[in-house]
Length: 483
Image 1 (spheres, helix red, strand yellow):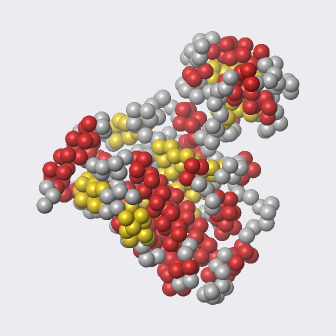
Image 2 (tube, helix red, strand yellow; image 1 turned 120 degrees about the horizontal axis):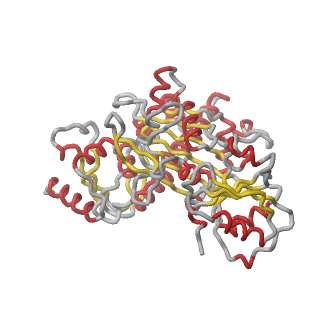
Image 3 (cartoon, one colour; image 1 turned 90 degrees about the vertical axis):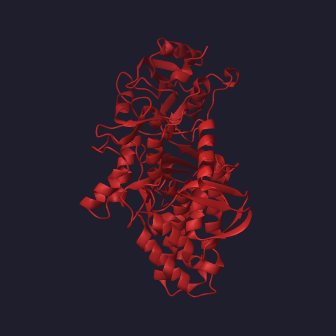
């Protein structure tokens, strides 16, 4: 017989060894926080579910559904004209906000416990997922915590939460985001159950003795707040509840007790659901389709239209695992956030740098894999490119040193100065020519190691006209302080 309390103590010792041990007060906080839908699997799964579900609804509404006729053949009339593009596609970046909430029966039913900015790059078929924690302060539009936007908006005007949260994230990260997909926790489980569960090939046997037990978050008996999860290696059929636990588990005493292993399990779950959802077993079953349509209408809301979903599916249906970039905003030692308490004593997360410039730069340049290379491979530019260099740090002389480097390669330096914010870690470059001087852009990135920023803040305007009119604005970070 397994001694549950003894196993709990073993877990605590292991976490302390890994320097992830928290005092009991913070464990109580985190036990509540772990109720939320926190995994990438659910986020990516939402996309697959919405794509398929909205398509199913459109097909059913279009005409009577006839078994034996190719499902996708019936969708041809829904495919948009070739010149019809998604918002952001012309800029090679389509942003979709994924929102997960507890839903009816949960405390704070409309609080968005999962917020993930999903960015899609059509030219390379890359996908970037940036997880935004629910407790992040949001000094935009007067919000204290980002997860409260949806709840307040829904209270004021039912149905407006998705759009308002999307607007708040756009302002916070200065990353234009138009689309959103919102799903509730119970709905996720029901949808998997409606398709008869999923089969997943569990790669390793593992146990998790600290999985939060549903409805026991406030149990006076601390150890009763958790349940024991056990998964055997091999092909396993899982219900919605079991699949969710399999994807969320993170405190196994084995090799499965780390984020890398969890990410792998999430990918396996996503693949299993996608295969089952789009299988003939599902698509040729009118009863299942009818139930799925009901679930989609009840549990998922989105402002993506049918043609936009089809367009996304066509562009990204063949994305490989190595094309997905995962980023998590956290208060880990190497993270961009720090934890603390607000004026009312509530747990909050704030930017480590004191403002959002570092986070915004990371988000805006997430697809840029440029890295410094030896200057001997760079030819002097010949398009008379004009560059303004702004020092985004408190390191003196940085702009002058970089200016000398660029002059050697025949760039024209129209001026130097200090950036509006002085806590940049990564150098960034703004292309004010809209791609007209691409050779110069490539040279700047190679010479300085700067990543390219694609947002258009209002403070860029003075660099487009007047005395400081430039082709490129280069903002130096601490990474530019090299010998």
